[in-house]
Amino acid sequence: MNNDYNFAFLDEGSKREIRRSILKAISIPGYQVPFGSRELPIGRGWGTGGIQITLSIIGKDDVLKVIDQGSDDSVNAVNIKKFVGRCTNVATTTDSEVATIIQSRHRIPETPLKDGQILVLQVPIPDPLRAVEPSERVTKQKHAEAEYSAMWLSLYEDLTKFGEINISSEYPCMVENRYVMNPSPIPRFDNHKLHNSEGLYLFGAGREKKIYAIPPYTSVIPLAFDDVPFKVENFEGKHCRLCGATGVYLDEMYSSDTGEKFYECSDTGFCEKNRGANHE
Amino acid sequence: MSAPIRDFAKRIGGQIMNKKVLSIRGLTVRYGNGCAHCKSSGTLTKNRCPICGTVWALRHADVDLYQGEILGIVGESGSGKSTLMRSLYFDFDITSGACTIENYKDGKQNIFKESMQQKRYIKNNLMGMVYQNPVLGLRMNYSAAGNIAEKLIAAGRREFHPMTDRVKELLNSVDILEERMKEPPKNFSGGMQQRVQISKALANNPEILLLDEVTTGLDLSVQAKVLDLIRRIRRDFGVSILLVSHDLAVIRMLADRTIVLLDGNIIEQGLTDQILDDPQHAYTQQLVHSLI
Image 1 (cartoon, each protein chain N blue to C red):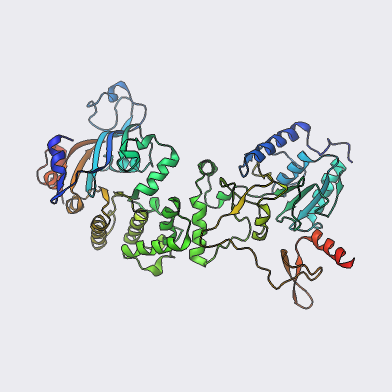
Image 2 (cartoon, each protein chain N blue to C red; image 1 turned 180 degrees about the vertical axis):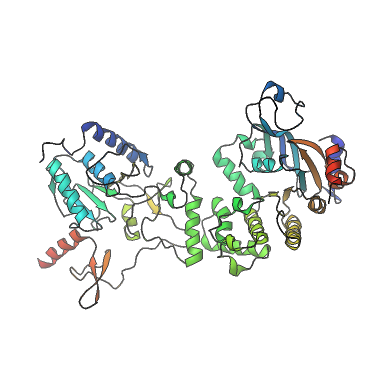
């Protein structure tokens, strides 16, 4: 551990302030709590919101897993893991079941969260209404009054023009029938994992200085018209070429040599564990 | 309004219109704090106070609207016509005054004192507004269908197919082809944009329709179509209409009763024929005789 820095890099006052914001976010599921986003040795927009949450809640006994688009080995994930590891000395893992804190970008692990686990998601644009309303003052007012007709209208427009809703990620969800929330850029496939989960979800947007949360056993329902059900990505008839898993989120890949199309699990930790189990 | 005029106003076209749907009392919209000089009524010759510079856009306006009636509002530019309409639609904050709607809380609640949510409910369920400038009333980059559906969604509808059926029905009623419902209004002519606005305003079967200079800027043939449409809407839907226009021909053709505004004050009101054929106030006489 690098002793030139405080435990978990941030000073204790900053961590306390962020933890207070987190507590408020947990108390009001889906509500975006403003917080004083700190400077970090990485650029804004590279996961600073998620890192600040992780650094504020991490303790010496925690086990950390960091993933980026489902991968444990991507540059972003490895660097964040190294950074947190150096200033806390906590154990790291690729196993979703062992980790107590999972920091993620753009995916929720395939293994459902258990009681006591925390998933920290990095969020670029926390406000779901930003796509339909540029003014922060107006979006705040709309959230306060639960006035989401502009959001519904954008869904209606999609259905009218294209015959389906073509939002691939960041699909807006209604939390506890009160706040519409941006679930961060996770694919639609992952949206149902937020609903009534055993674990705690924390969302941090460093550049936009907002934190919001989904506490355990919270209702999170994707917005959908009564007669047009919400649809997720369809992987029917496809499987992972490495572990053979089906019913999971798959990445589509092409062989540069043969041009052949194949699929692999997006969650590399899950795939690795699956392969180990297959071997045994 | 004086008693004889009110009694007369109840009998229009052989029908007795004794059900008041909207009642405005003492509506004042002021820009500036006002001073002792301009606050005492009757001291201003224009709507701008020469001492403190306060603009009295509308001053102590009393208006009643009866069921199925078209009430015309005329006056020169800056007389407060649009201020009256847009205050009613909660686009502007008012300074003082009260407005009650018969079918809202038994006509006992001043709608200007309601919460934002309640005001939104009134806007989306009890009123429809057509602006002079379609940009204010339509989202130019959304489809025509989306624009109309917005009003349905705002009223709490969450079924896609029934909403689309309703949108088609409304577009049909204003003679816009179903095939064009996916096009944004920015591709439409001015008359078509006004018709989309009208169908949007009618989406939730409101009992009050606010029409602000709907025919301004349209050529005569399109104007005639829109005027026919307004007449048809009144006949078919039985809505009460507040119609602002500076075109006296439009007022004569449509309005049952007419109010004349000057510098934020109501200077004359009565049956349209009475106002246009036998104007009493000097300004109304000037207005009627200044037809080109």
